[in-house]
Image (cartoon, rainbow, N blue to C red):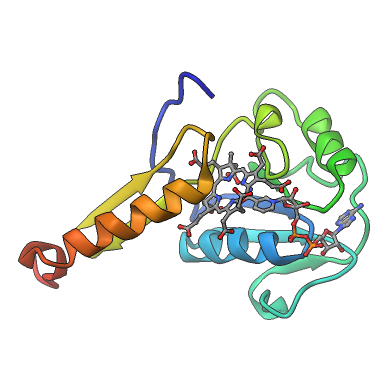
Length: 154
Ligand SMILES: C[C@@]1(CC(=O)O)c2cc3[nH]c(cc4nc(cc5[nH]c(cc(n2)[C@H]1CCC(=O)O)[C@@](C)(CC(=O)O)[C@@H]5CCC(=O)O)C(CC(=O)O)=C4CCC(=O)O)c(CCC(=O)O)c3CC(=O)O
Ligand SMILES: NC(=O)C1=CN([C@@H]2O[C@H](COP(=O)(O)OP(=O)(O)OC[C@H]3O[C@@H](n4cnc5c(N)ncnc54)[C@H](O)[C@@H]3O)[C@@H](O)[C@H]2O)C=CC1
């Protein structure tokens, strides 16, 4: 992604589909629940890091048509073929993240540092997620030395 357009999205009134129920799905689901979105997981299995009480679990293999009513979609099965099919099935008004192939993604997830009054996000434009994670940690260490970052008021 050479020309990213950064935005913060309010997902609290949106339906988000996560295809796949493994470790990566668990990370994406955690962020989506923090954002108060309505999460639907489409997957035959669910790892123990995803609480079925907090999502709608559609217990099946992905099939065309499953994402018809979804606003935002994250494809993170361990099959690149299935993930690619999800991108193919999406309409032009749905945004898809293919966690296994950045070239097939309309949007990327970002690393973040957050407090009550501040949100700092980090992206390497898809070049190195591990580097984004490391830079996030360094930014957090610096921010934690700033009084206003830790302030609860204001
Ligand atoms: C393009 C993007 C799309 C997206 O997922 O949105 C993407 C893609 C891919 N990631 C891969 C691997 C890893 N990703 C992580 C971690 C994170 N990845 C995240 C984002 C993004 N990852 C987007 C671009 C971000 C940017 O612009 O910098 C973070 C920041 C946010 C989040 O996931 O929510 C989160 C850190 C969260 C945090 O700690 O804060 C780790 C490390 C770890 O898990 O500890 C590894 C293993 C090490 C390695 O392999 O490098 C692979 C290869 C998969 C394979 O092997 O097939 C692909 C596929 C590809 O590159 O095509
Ligand atoms: N973007 C990112 O941050 C990262 C992405 N990845 C990618 O994510 C993929 C998934 O990784 P993990 O979660 O660790 O794999 P995993 O093996 O833990 O989980 C895979 C999940 O996909 C489900 N699944 C398989 N076929 C399916 C189908 N037809 N329909 C619906 N669900 C199906 C399985 O039931 C399982 O729940 C990796 O293969 C890799 O390509 C890996 C690391 C980081």
